[in-house]
Image 1 (cartoon, rainbow, N blue to C red):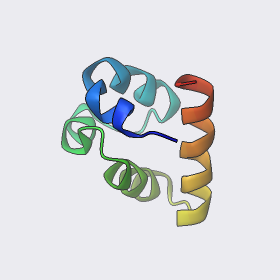
Image 2 (image 1 turned 90 degrees about the vertical axis):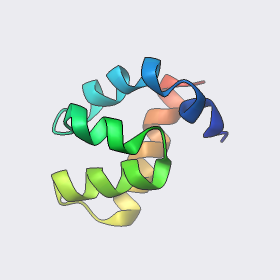
Image 3 (image 1 turned 120 degrees about the horizontal axis):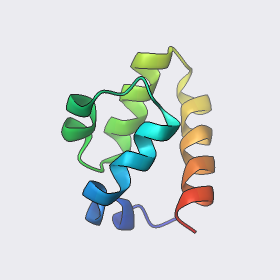
Image 4 (image 1 turned 60 degrees about the horizontal axis):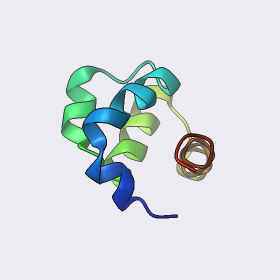
Length: 67
């Protein structure tokens, strides 16, 4: 998985992220700025999910959206 693609195109991709995780605010997305570890942390915070579950969800989203 090449997360650099997400970071490099964050302005275009963040709408898709917000569709998937609607509890993330515009401010959250601006702070995340494409960094995976921050995205996972915000998802954990907003949804109350375990770290491993969030990592799997982000992987699934990436594989569906970016490949």
